[in-house]
Length: 272
Image (tube, rainbow, N blue to C red; front, side, top):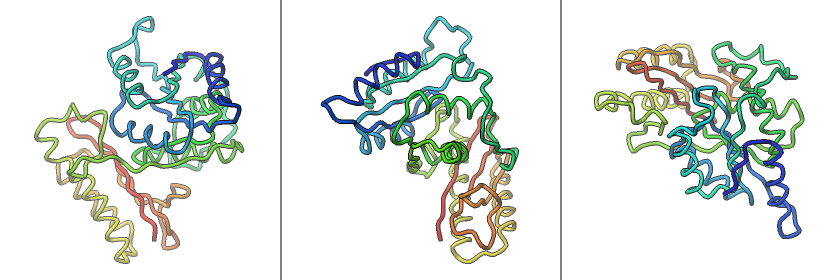
């Protein structure tokens, strides 16, 4: 596995791999924020099935107080990516990704609680420009961010396909998360409520429920009643993340909550 810490080094490595054997090889990109888990592993594995060269990019978060040292999590991530046989790890520093480059796409029509910070979208755009992948793969659990990056790609005319990979779940239905090790035994007993509530909402829609706001309110009561601090529960139109209506055919049910101040998020898609 090659490791690149700059766009120049990345381009050198990609040029070598992209045209190996005299023919152009397909490039896929998996963008993460590090602290990887088997959900990320499933996305990397999927990338290997649809491309010849897999690039895993770890977007900087600004959370490393010792910039001259590699943290334990970063060591683990390098080993994780190597075990999953990605070809290149792109780990750029903070400054080149965030900067002050203005976005050319306006996201003000996205509900404020879903809207990604401009610096986050700029970071994704710069990674896309550096890698120039044929395909970008995302885990379904992170659908809100996926949706906005997909729109960024579409409106800027970037020639990259976006593939969504199903969420990896424990046998209880709970989505695999970086925070799994933080949950207590009591927390783990509560967590299945999240996915069960998503499924119940999906079943209600399939059964012909017409008052979607009532379905949302019932779901909110279920999650709060289980002991979570609920942040939101919404039934959205998957195409534009607006509230679903009678005309919606592709739904995205999303929720975010906290348990003992540990964030828990999940989403479920439904097509009628």
